Length: 450
Image 1 (cartoon, rainbow, N blue to C red):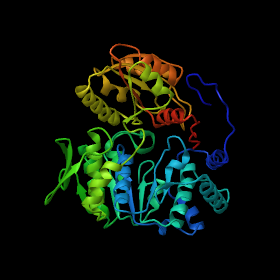
Image 2 (spheres, helix red, strand yellow):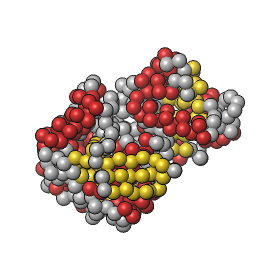
Image 3 (tube, rainbow, N blue to C red):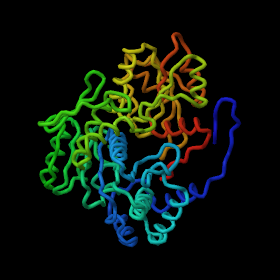
Image 4 (tube, one colour):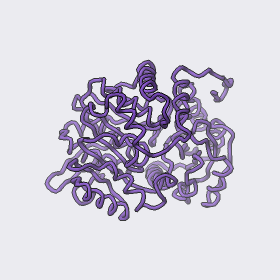
């Protein structure tokens, strides 16, 4: 359904692609069942496409892995390479997950790959992410390219992407608490799952980590024989005079500031540069790629669409971010505080969260910074949405005034009230972010069925 100011609610029949996605989601009773056996069986039946991929950078972590992949893709493309990329979840269209030689995969190519995977699978149980990952590998293996940037879906050790035997580099972005129901409820349990992508003799770039996570990752690296480049020991990046400085023991690069906004993007860019160095990509490509990287819903300033129109009529700014765990909340609150110091405006959050996310932990970072929270629910989440009143209660528990709204347009109208005109940040979920971007395009987002 499409809802927006002045719009009639429209019900649209599912597309052929949406019907195929729903069918694939029915092949396993669980949406997530971490294992490699089912996928390895299917890939064998498909002729092992994972062995015919271009040189691959494999990226895991809790926060920032999508941004790191975006930088790596842009850096490689700045060198003139044709780049495949794999990411999840999507925001608006499933096709966003698969980039073939620089172009988003077509419906036709997806449907063909899905049909071949279904035929090879012969009705055996397999999760949605596993069979769609098999389809991605099939497409990657059959389309010429110079490089593949491969983002882990969940965890690392048993993630479906971890059937790649010999990547050219692995990277682990900052690890924090998330997906505890699958990965464990402490960093000492989660970090080894992320480190499960490390391979013998393959360079591993390790981003800044809490001590508990760093110790676990380095222990795994030593056990498997993976040489490490560790943030703070072997490389680092920092901002200076509105530039990015990247340093190793015998190297200093003075680079332009990354295109993605926020000080946390300095860290993400630094990890990407270290990985690019491990892939022998030159400084010129790094310099150009940093300024070309694009990654929607990562502190994105919205400048069009019906929600923007509502905000603009009140003189308010409108921003969007899909970060959804407490560590993301901390990074985002720092970025908004930096904006506040340069251009003071009251901050109002429009928030929605998946049911299993720590809304209170996320919102705690905004105590004393956000004027209020307008809580909303969304429809496209894999596990539904937390009720708006539960989110409002979480905000109130962190001493932030909070109300609920029945739609995004109502939430923006509420958030835009007040003098001076506020800075509105829509946040808390990639699914909510997808609905915002879909509304801006006047289309219906493709739900994640499994």
